[in-house]
Image 1 (cartoon, rainbow, N blue to C red):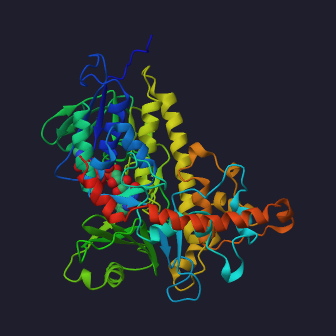
Image 2: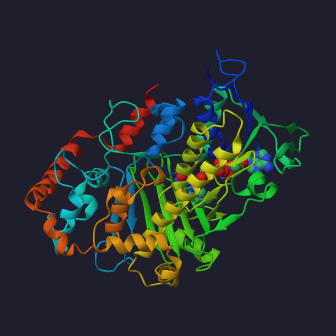
Image 3: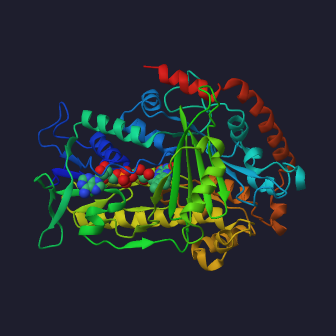
Length: 524
Ligand code: FAD
């Protein structure tokens, strides 16, 4: 017999990406009272959101996990592309991260989403790349270019899949860029069709019971909303988990310095301007810019450290990056709370999204963390009404995941060779680098990273992402005496040649990125 739920009512407070994605995921995977054909004993989900406050409306880059999430909640790819002004994202191009603009050496490196090529029974390519099987010295191909076809495909403005590939599938691994406001609207419509009740109201007061748990939330409009479980998706406000329950926020600004963003939306000069299928992340004196190509416009922002520059200078850096297209356009300034709550589930309230934490936009961890939290809540769901054991497991998992993401993001900064500004000099100061990351990098100085370094379920980024960033940032691994453990040098060298040849075929096979997007917009 199925366990009978003691949790009958869930109240989600907040209707941004976090609120609606969680609502859709829960509604798709739990037995809902209001869903057509479902048992009246099922769970009911209500989402209250404030139109007055609105959503943050940024966050336009994603990680490939988003495809699995969209499929799981029942939104098909063509609808998503069409309704969210979306494009494909095959990875991230990092410009000027290793050394400043104009210095001698490679200006860019690429973090592709496809894993390094590995033929069945063939050698693992990373050690052989380190040993020079893909060329040595100046003739050595960059790691991402040597082991994967994706950089060339993306550079040639090709999409990651063919016109007739099935939903969410293609020869290349990929995520999307999208309009955050449109995504919230799509998820809201979809959530309602799955049986989620929407209430438009602003929560003004959170009432606690004698035990310190939430008894009700009261809105400005005079409603008192009660539930068995509350999900705080109120963004940086953290109205429930922070303001009402006081779960401490662990600020990470001593490790990850950026705490402001200034952003603009820039239309394309021509309707057929090619759209890059990757985020362009360019390092500047006190942070970096994101440059994301949607269907009709680019979303561009400078994320910077307020301890290393001021607002006026930051806006100037953004305008210099954009050029004349920024003339006459106003910029939006955002303050970022970089850090997380070590306890994201307190009593009968769980925080998902910015209310739980945020680790700056590099590598798009925001939505990935929402997906993880929504999966955990759904799959660990306390059907027997016992919240404490689930809360413990949830909190442990999220804390470890945050710690690993912090290491991964910090690795981008602390491997720089830039010394041209205090921001970059401070970033390599060992006192700003977590011990866990220092230990990992110390091991990788004398052997390449291995999948055994990672506990997959706790990592947002697969081992290949660590490798692409590590060696893109020109990290040095000395293979030392262990180089003789790699006898398949010739075979690996042939493999590298084969990848280069095959990328030419792939480029002929894959369509232009903009054409692919336009094609999918017409699919009903
Ligand atoms: P919000 O969008 O702020 O939504 C909060 C919701 O709560 C709103 O509906 C609001 O009305 C409601 N609310 C608040 N208070 C009340 C109240 N009292 N009563 C009722 N309702 C209330 N993530 C990525 O994955 N990729 C990226 O590229 C990326 N880039 C980013 C860039 C920047 C500059 C920033 C700041 C964030 C970025 N993020 C990114 C993070 C991403 O934007 C968020 O994770 C995502 O939008 C989820 O936000 P949210 O739903 O938690 O909060």
